[in-house]
Length: 414
Image (cartoon, rainbow, N blue to C red; front, side, top):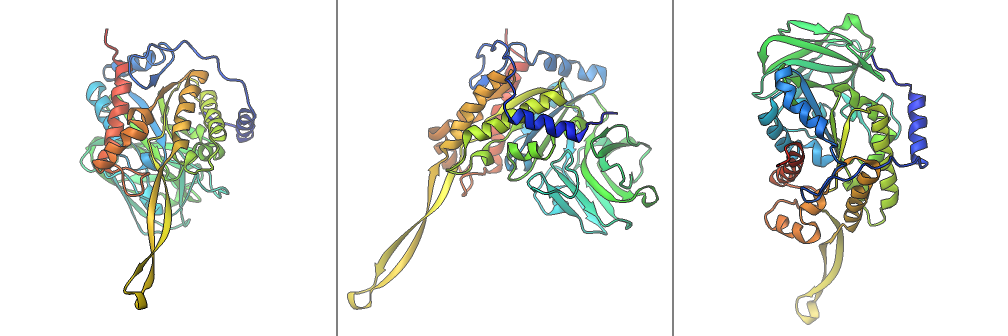
């Protein structure tokens, strides 16, 4: 059972923000793939672990943590598919209960509720009334009242469901379950219960055991196939930046899924302002990297740089219509887009950070072509009208770029 002292954790975060020394960088690996950096041999253990996972009947957990680019689920899908085809399918992984607090969610699973209203808090909130869980949020319902949660994997079988609840919350029981292991381990304020079924299922309904708790506070769940292989989870919160995950004492919660690789895909919200301070954002990213390394020393870290985006503003002009005596002035508002150079600066800074801290990094910003290359993405309709978010195919293409870069390291050619 792992328990972290919150005061110690906060003091550590503050000390890192105040400029703790950089980790000594290991020698860089040859640039065997464009826009990639990693210390020599950095992913060797991960590669070996993935190759042995099926035979050893264990899961290798990989988490991609980010913002709205990740919350939709499209960007992580190519990586999940590629790794599970090669190394075995350990399950869907993390299931965010985003829709219960009114947000969007990936479309390859469904979580619905009957009986009670739910309220949610995310890492974006400066003053929290409940601890934040692994998904970057917490959900609560009125105490003492029954409810039903319906979980569907939409055609993807699972045999285990790991649900995270506060230590005082009602344990959940699934329809037809054959076993349950409660409170296997605790991280901060949350405990993990594992529900299991004797045969694979694709849907279940969860209900609380009201006689065994005092509140209804949950953080989501993970679906496992019961087989060995890659377990790739996507966790994202719309609007999130490095500072939000750092300030919310979030890093310790990542231990719930015991990741062997943590992919940090942040930066858009850190830099989405013409007045954004790139150095300040970089300091927050560095603090989070160091914090993860302190709390999860066996976890490898892969930074990805933010994709290209544009600032949007309105330009107002006036035109005159009609004949001379009846001329009228009409206001015309035009949307003006300007390339987000702050994201480009932050991308370069993150690549330097990876070398200084001795972690891996993939320059997605450059891999997509930067300021010039993104024009073709716009022409193909891959960037949405706000010029910040991408269409489904755009996110999947980003995910494919990352997948190809990572596989080149996991399976290097002789």
